[in-house]
Length: 168
Ligand code: DAT
Ligand code: MG
Image 1: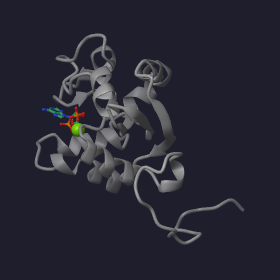
Image 2 (image 1 turned 45 degrees about the vertical axis):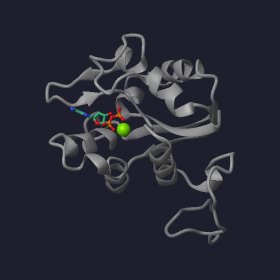
Image 3 (image 1 turned 90 degrees about the horizontal axis):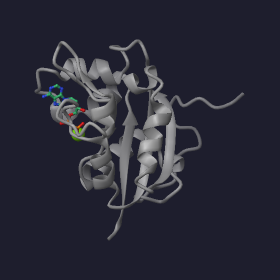
């Protein structure tokens, strides 16, 4: 079996409810390796790019508010890359079904998720659903130097990228 990489996002509800430790403990049951991790604020562009496949859905705008923290007044998410054999399937299994009420009760979404009165699934974590999606998402959320394994071909860039800040 080949090694795979998969993107996990602990969404704003997970951080707001102080579930980060619990979720990381559950994910460690997979025995996969964390090869990248950071806490970031999700801007509109990233949110829309991440969920572009759902842009025709009636819940799209609320989903963007959810992942960007507007729904919870909590603009942090934790982004992680897990790596190892069958990483995508292993993480999807422990994450549980998209709908937290249909998810296995001992899965992460089954244990900690809920459905909002608006109907949006507040399901605590994101997990990549295929190899292609994982590559697209990891390249969207991480720069090559933030990952300790050379996952995909990269090129040398300029020392300072765009408006990226550096220490004084
Ligand atoms: P997943 O996150 O399991 O890959 P997805 O990519 O289809 O599922 O959807 C992304 C997010 O959108 C999901 O985590 C919660 C929300 N969502 C999906 N389908 C929904 C629905 N029918 N009603 C409300 N929210 C939904
Ligand atoms: Mg998905």
